[in-house]
Image 1: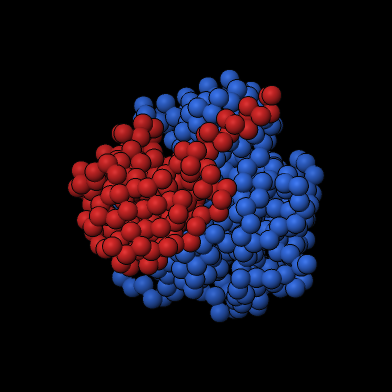
Image 2: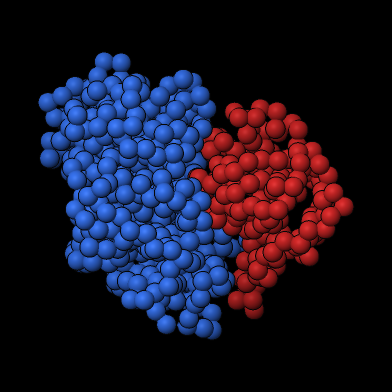
Length: 165
Length: 421
């Protein structure tokens, strides 16, 4: 799984209330949610993101309310993966379960610049930036497997099939 | 080896071929209770269908609570509630709580004795950690993951490191559990407990009743924690004996358990604390805030609409009036608490003071309805978050604090120490 895309640089402790305000929580279609991502703090964000783009954020990305509209809205916008210094744990788990690849790297969040083209290799846990190949800590194997399957839905299907056979 | 409460509770629920856990490991475990509301339920149900799951593996352990869009503020909200009713009927979920039948999930489920000490509780809502007040391991999960638990009756957990918080000394007037957690947030910040368990104990613990312990655990997620667990003591045992519908197991850390860090709090130095906009870590002593006019005071949420909170509010509002230019909204967390407040005469005091009293709902807490804020408005609330846009408009501001300060602020029209009223 290798992703090549332009960086959207975000700061520390970006919370889910600014990603998707509470009043939109009755929207269930990812494409409808995508239009409102960061609407009030950065109204042109949704129109600037192109398919394949990569979010690079600081620490505690996705903190606050556990709302799946945030990661699935970002995914529907075309965000291919997210690299952050650290993630809020519910957001982290939501990304994994939805098959939205993530990596943890403080170095990248310091080095990457907004708009820059970077390449992320999830299996090898490597990021190519300014012709520098940076090795980041790999995700646990079980979690890599879930992301590789496209999320937890496929894993549950397999478990259900095993049980009924 | 000596273990923390989080490790012991996870160990008791393992379905791996092992019986011990170490922090950092990913383990498979059985969950005791699954908690969904009408904000996450409709999304969870779609995942459940996509997984090809037909029936809920353990339907007796699943509760569906209508609290976010309850009562429906719009047609879109009504659709969410409709999804809840349909799924409950189709899948035979008996623990379904519609408008008027329950209240806010995190207060309602323990009130009904459906969770207890030693339980592993998973919820689609981030404040599921409130269960820690009852000596349980509660944690907010991904919504697809919640569907997986309903399908399989199991899930995966990364075993958390634990942080120990020791409460000592005698607390002073007008301080509550809310101030304990706000003080901790001031010290460790919104990522100070990221992925970890926060465990609370010490000789000062017995000054906090079950309701105030809920206020503490309710906001552990604001420090990034996976869960927060209050030690089980006589107060826990007495609550569990009277309330729990099934067997429970008080679970305390072993002496000598290893913690990521240890923190000591002298409660005699604790003051009413306020989180300023726009972060729950932006915390100061109430006396550091001067001349902040408040348009709206909102009292209630999943841990601060308890009968203890309502009594604290009434002790301030009784015989006083809400300030001109300020409005107050009081929301009991469950129908039972609402009724208790009527019996005790608290509601009379609220209405006489000029406060609006509403049915249980999460509405205004997430800026959804029942008290949402406009651009430029400033609110004081006993809720758990004050991020930009949380109260409604991104140009609104929300200050967080305890019920005494909220009530005093409603009377003064500006943020004030209740001792100065």
